[in-house]
Length: 145
Image 1 (cartoon, rainbow, N blue to C red):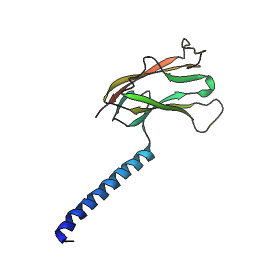
Image 2: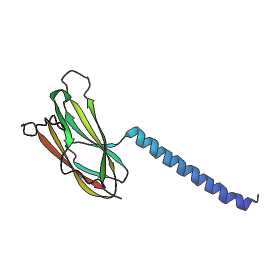
Image 3: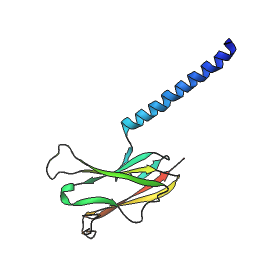
Image 4: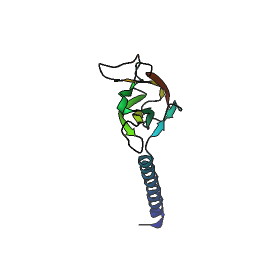
């Protein structure tokens, strides 16, 4: 093969290899660092399409109080819920608190609000939204290109 034809192939191969390493590194970094976490002191969320994020709020599972998404539901074109989990504080002791993580994935560019309600037996037929401990937190979510 003539040397002039080999050089463009070599340059193309190097560019493809560099791009593959960068994409792989970004994927690994994202998996290791996890989603961005926002809490009640940081209610302004700004993410890119396809990005995942979590809303973290203090909760004590032993009290029967729990966080849930309140009406109106966030715009499903802008964000979708992907799950929820509870993580107990360390050290794990009976009656100690922890954090509720509500996970979301950003969709199309736009703006929506996620209103969360903290109430006793939230999400059950015996839900108690009238107690003094019942409270809400609203997150303003912007998905930007």
